[in-house]
Length: 295
Image (cartoon, rainbow, N blue to C red; front, side, top):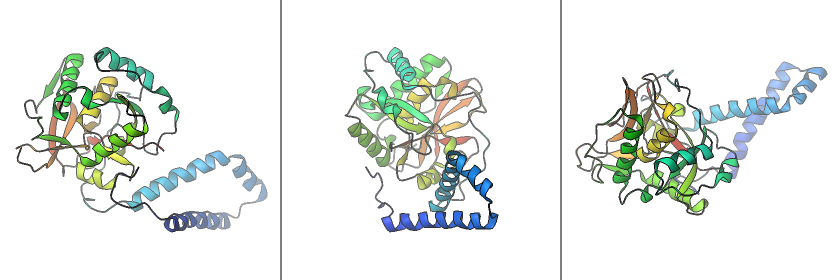
């Protein structure tokens, strides 16, 4: 289920990295010189020790393994989910979508969400196939945007009339992941997608985010992010909520074939707004939403 052209790490590479970790723990144990009671207490808290090692290893490996390309397009950010957003259950999301789109929303396979979330994912999100909403991707995005306007009351689309295929498209990488998810879940109308709403990539430009994605991670586009906003309206309710880049889409403002921008959602003053910006823009108040292949 690879979604990049890069080959996976070889068994030899994995074993060598694993050996680095094992050697590091051995050295720490020698340096600390644990006595018998101390060692026993660590053993009794084995689950906590394992979790701490996992989190430290995950952070270090993610930091050391990513490309340096566009590394200068990252800024420190303290923005987050100020309005108290938390991922809803699959059942709650399904019920909301059925109320909003009764003609196109069918059943959802709830058991998928019983699986383990991939590293980096916040929760499971119910995402319909855009093909069930319209004949083109841009038209499907417009349906979602119109629904956000109806449910929120105050909404502005700066790209109105400029969402045709000559302006907007999904990235090939994102298209491929959703195709793989669909095939793995039996080609349903509703996919259950592990994802995160932007916090993992806050402060990074879209093109930097695309460089640091893991091999099983892709950016989410305007359709998916719009659906997630509909099922989680509390995600954007304050000007200080982290704004959302749609790194899974590519946008060209002049319809000339140079896809130099990506769409985004923000909360400005009293309304949600939709627009696009340069791929190289790195701002502390933006973060890209993304999806993952399940483990």
